[in-house]
Image: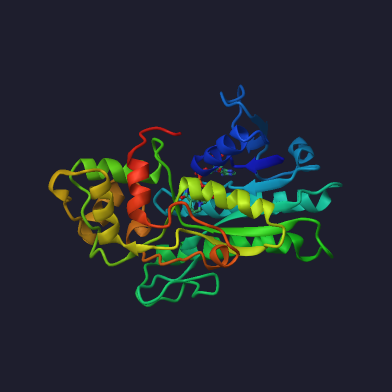
Length: 323
Ligand SMILES: NC(=O)c1ccc[n+]([C@@H]2O[C@H](COP(=O)([O-])OP(=O)(O)OC[C@H]3O[C@@H](n4cnc5c(N)ncnc54)[C@H](OP(=O)(O)O)[C@@H]3O)[C@@H](O)[C@H]2O)c1
């Protein structure tokens, strides 16, 4: 297969590109980075994420496009960063959609990044694809509502691109992904593992908030399965079937990392806010209760290799770098 990955130079894109390349597929990453080609064994083609250009030729006859482009949300939500978070996602999705519609031989499937953050902050029940979207939760910080608004506009932009096309040749799948856990340096799992090893891996806040996650291997398998399964389109939750409260999640990670006595210093919410300020990030990723389940994947027969956190954490702790 030929697979084109706009924004495929980041954590998730590199994971997918490496896996598809290893399996013998042709991988083309679209990147804004100028300069000599990156030291990767797949092709990296320039684009600016905003305007049409030579990159569009790569879409002709492609089997799949997986759009991951967007400014990292791991930053303070200042006005300038907010603008970049929104513009980078909507502009890249719009220009990609226009190119798909113009293509003489359009890609068979367009997998568009979205996020499990789109669902409501809740403890009482899990959100499947029909679950409660967020934005109106009483007491939710304004930054959480911002993330939900971004995700909603992102999905709308992708849907609008194909809306006017009678019988579009390209199937659109919106990936509402939970945090992708991989062992490689710099990712969210690596950060958590380092905290745990420093003795700082206790519960965060009151520890009741749910953590939705997906093992990187299952993420790759699910994306590959979605490319091959021609009957599926629309919203898909990419999350392991068993989200768990933060307290239990951190305890599972301490066990997997074999921390003596299972000790981990808890971090109260107020301290997390201060730490986030100095680390130039937001506490949303840690404190929002994301209780998201992959109902459609399970209904359609996708089998997770790592459905439970304990087993996933043990597997991830056994590997230091990327596989
Ligand atoms: N990682 C997760 O667990 C997770 C979970 C849910 C959703 N997501 C979403 O999935 C996507 C990929 O995640 P990731 O963790 O791989 O993100 P990432 O590491 O931040 O990579 C995203 C890529 O987007 C490109 N980009 C950055 N700023 C841009 C801009 N202003 N305009 C156009 N492109 C820009 C960059 O590529 P170049 O610099 O090469 O152009 C970058 O490598 C993101 O949109 C993220 O929000 C991720």
